[in-house]
Length: 402
Ligand code: C5P
Image (cartoon, rainbow, N blue to C red; front, side, top):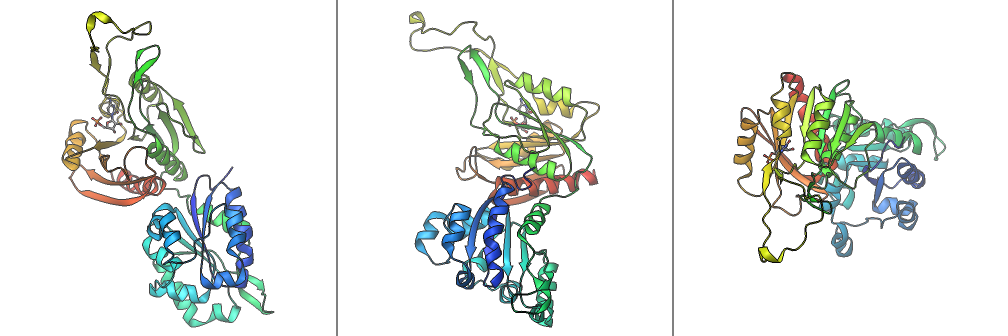
């Protein structure tokens, strides 16, 4: 199993002798399925060349905050949003001190302040430096703020000392990074997710559909599986790999999707992220429709309403905790609140699809979640994976309180 499949990791390399292990770490992270971008401090470059890490990560290494060329390719804010985890290995005493004080005087420290993603440090330093009260105070402060520490380990050190301060080995760090994505928030719960568009046939060669890529629903399925849920993902036609530990059911039309969802009931929690076609052609022509000269330039297609999958499941006696999505191009919160009421939902996730940087098919998203009391919780722009994990954590809390 690739424990970091499709996870985006920024690896920060500080200036310590353990930086030589970072090369191996890049390989291990990628072996576990992660996409890795490397950011090096000035000190890190003294110990290992950017070229090595570029070759191993498959991407240019990010070095300076004020490098116009690098910022044009992927600026530090984009990098901060892109990543699912910032792992700093080695993390020197100096880096820990700067991070503890919120100093942002290079690319790596700036990125740590700018990201919403979890941050983990793999300390590496001489045993006396690690034991120093200043370093220990910084460690405590960082941990209080939710920054994780992997290690350090104990043993013989490059300087000849023996004691605490050795950086953990690459495989141990890769496993610890994977553990960051695992949690038991939804353990044991059966969860149903709908995703992607539906296709409604007009004739044997044509259909009506929409721009949904399925990325958000798939990211939610992955995050829910990481949270320990038993996930069934009912998806319309999309080009996405199935997340680990997720049972995937492929469907085409809205009616197929409803049937597959009903077959997957009962479940404790339903997240309806699919963009279901509201209408379908009343009759599917048995043969390819021909251009008909008697009707002039037009073609009239009679459409009928599709069943509302979410509303149907929310009306069942064994109703799950229901989370809907509202993708709108205007009056986002008003329309979303109306849907929450009309479909009898517990939560609705409002998504502004008029904004091209977060809408259909984009890699990022920004959403607001509304509850029955009309409280609005905002989740700022970040990768769909990151938003999905934050949403799953939020939904899990609300589910437990219900
Ligand atoms: O009414 P609207 O399509 O905007 O509602 C969006 C929400 O309802 C989404 O959660 C979507 O998955 C769900 N839905 C559904 N079946 C439909 C239409 C929408 O489950 N036929």
